[in-house]
Image (cartoon, rainbow, N blue to C red; front, side, top):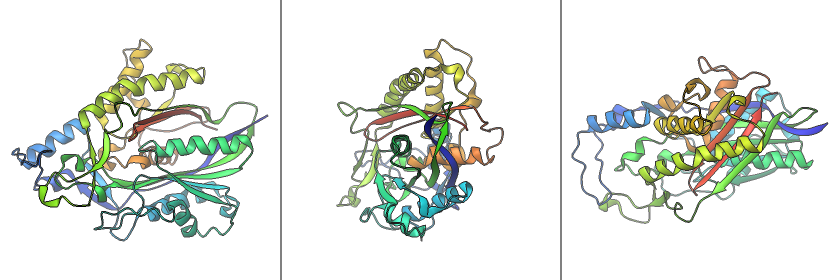
Length: 358
């Protein structure tokens, strides 16, 4: 019998505030050099939706910060697992920019968000270790990899792994890319399970490319010269990022399958970071091509980006939770299903692991 890390509970928090593409039609978008983009707002948002498939996104309530929504998702995961929170060994919170209050541009990461989440969950046990991980959009998937090591080594019996972000508060209002991002949180509660057959988190693959790609996502000044100050905003080089992901993610996905002695036919679902629907579809197409397959089963890759936008570290755990709860039409996960969870983001970091449903 071996020890495996199995998700016995999941949770997510989808903020109630809905921002539709039409809400951006009167926005003054600028080019990188500060010049005005003369294209009509209506045309800009229509083209944006064609490229990304995003029709609307969710934004956190003004009174909530990242650690709040992380705690909401964590609470749901604990409840769905029917788990005694005082027995938790680890709380790991993946995020990018900490707690940013509404109207502020300054991230707050001291104390750690994980410590704040532990306090908000009412956990008193001092042996429940709480810490953060910042790994770009793949932060939650990397945190799951770390928690898996703790459990398989015997160091821990349980871990609450949360991904949460409120990136909309760090977007330049004059940058068209501001329409991509959203807020949200997702969580999974992992427990140690003895099994003769592999179950839960299996083998993973991770890489970090800094030589030529470290600047594809970064913090920088506004495109509006009048806003230039100490305030920094999330910026990305969209075309270069798209090409990087399209080149690298499919190969890493294949490496992950190879590491698990699997092929594409063994995969029941691909839960990929909801970054850009067209990009994700192109990645899936290239994965199929690596196996000489031309007929693509798009149902293998469920999507939430159309209505939820890109909530960074929260996209994969939110997707996992919604499917587990039966809240995505036509999608389910059954016992024995092999699920690939993969993400790409700032760093540039990419990871993927296989998860076998118990």
